Amino acid sequence: MIVDLTPSTPALVEETARLIHDSFRERTAAWPDLESAMAEVLDSLQEGRVSRVALDEAGRVIGWIGGQPQYDGHVWELHPLAVDRGHRRRGIGRALVEDLESIARARGGITLWLGSDDELGETSLAGRDLFEGLAGQLDAFRSWGEHPYPFYHRLGFRLVGVMPDANGVGKPDIFMAKRIARPDG
Image 1 (cartoon, rainbow, N blue to C red):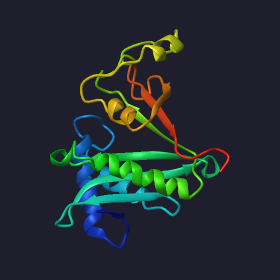
Image 2 (image 1 turned 135 degrees about the vertical axis):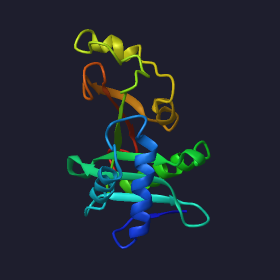
Image 3 (image 1 turned 45 degrees about the vertical axis):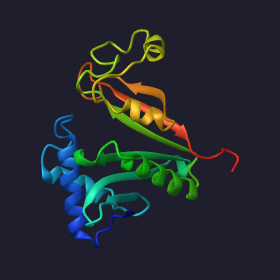
Image 4 (image 1 turned 30 degrees about the horizontal axis):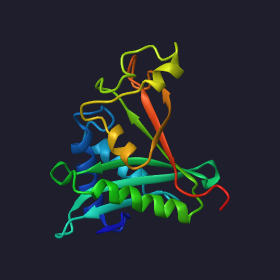
């Protein structure tokens, strides 16, 4: 079951902070402790944003997705997505993304985008000078290991750009996007 995460459900907010901390602690320095993870979750509860959680049969948080409108609501950013390690590869991430797509589309969204950092050298863009020959490097893009690119690609997202050195020298943020509605309505 996927439901809204709200300030009126403090137990779910706390579980969500634990989920994001546990899911990303070996992949990024973004949420190194529960305090920073809680700040991220609370930030997602701002008016106009979307914050949704997947719950198991016992009502525990097993997945979370956030989204926020940009460009007058035509474009939405998916940030973040996390699924409990023990529940991955069961369609929960896909269901959360499709749920966000539906909400964003209903609110006038045309495009959904995300950034997927490569801090661990799991793509062909890591460790390179992306200011030289970028178009060719994007054309030859590959990923391996646990980088989420293949997951998002299966859901229809396409590589649309990169921010070189976003996380330090040779550690880019990789931008992906997909059209979620016809641009003419």
